[in-house]
Image 1 (cartoon, helix red, strand yellow):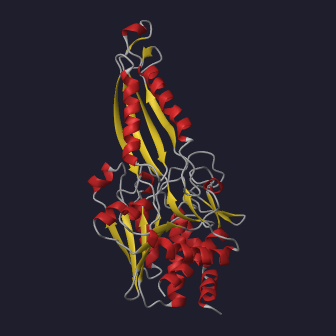
Image 2 (tube, helix red, strand yellow):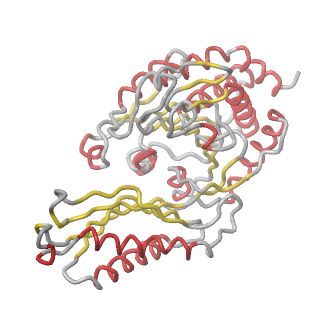
Image 3 (tube, helix red, strand yellow):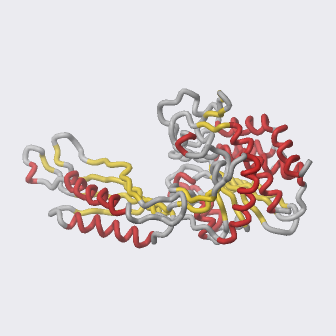
Length: 407
């Protein structure tokens, strides 16, 4: 029996415990917003201690957390040092969007039905707290490595950009691995992803009674003109295609809009928020400047209208670093053996906080437990779920990969 076979056997023998661990993680809510996520870190640290894993608790100062739009954040780091050599970090995030309506299973129940586990973050990405923790447990029980180190990093602000999670930890030099793997899905290893620019635009006009509309300046009509100009950009974006397989073209979405005071009042103010996805080949500075200019020019053609533009988020694209090849090769090799099909290396139109490690010069990839697509997992929708066999097999792939990297 090979070492890989022994790792697989250990994971099979402890799989019930792995599923129970994930159920406990799902049962502590981490809705973001509001982002009161320190209690989940406390519970996770307690559970990890039961495995003999001492978790460092890095509480982010309250003022910084509030400035990021959250309530409480404690990041967890588990360091497992085996000897001299490279450090491989495994990062999953515990924050989630609120469950919303339409669930047929308890979003915080961790219920199991028809071979799947249900609950908010079952697929994205509390599952990979479980994948990574049990991969490391298997590694230590079977391979007993004597070189290098593994670090588990569990953070809680990916939904808000990662600024008080990975970015904060990197800037304070709490972590700085040689290689990293972040939470993902089982059937592809992601090496690149889109960037994202989010902005809040406030259109100012002048309130007036609806009976005498000419005495005011309608901010909603002005916003409509600006929105039309923005939406027209999506037609132009179709001609900007990425060379990264799995990524197509840029696009722009208006996610929220609000304004006005009453039905019989000409709106004096309207605010909307936009999301502009950027392909890896685009320059974020140029993208932002272009959108600002388009909005300003459109507003300037409307008498009495002014606009305020505020950047909410700038997440740069994940660019593959040459040093990620050992990760890609190991995951592809073991993924094909365990899943019985080729595991492609692709880009994704999503954005993640893995980009922050890339910007720090740390090669990384995205790989973990999950289906072929986000849509299949119901992530961010009702009845989010994970096929337990994907969890089992992804854990085997990660354990085998760590065995190779630390040989």
